[in-house]
Length: 98
Image 1 (cartoon, rainbow, N blue to C red):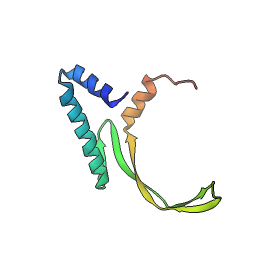
Image 2: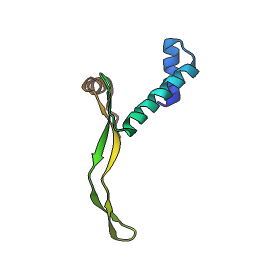
Image 3: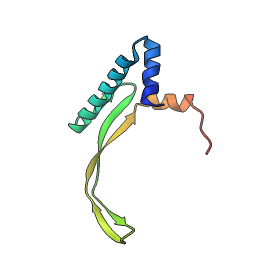
């Protein structure tokens, strides 16, 4: 599902203009991004949390030059789904065979 699909579904469900819904969805995503960039986590009860995870410094390898490189510690955004969300996905979806 894409952002356009989400906008279309919400617009159809609520009877709102697609332009208004798209502006709302984009504003929500911008607020989440801004909050994470300023160091604040975003908690949405029943859905999940957008959090900042810190990756520790580690040693990696550049295989083309056969040298070791130092990867500095850094922060990355992450999403942690709520337990009720995880349980719903587990019980309501079929396992896909590879």
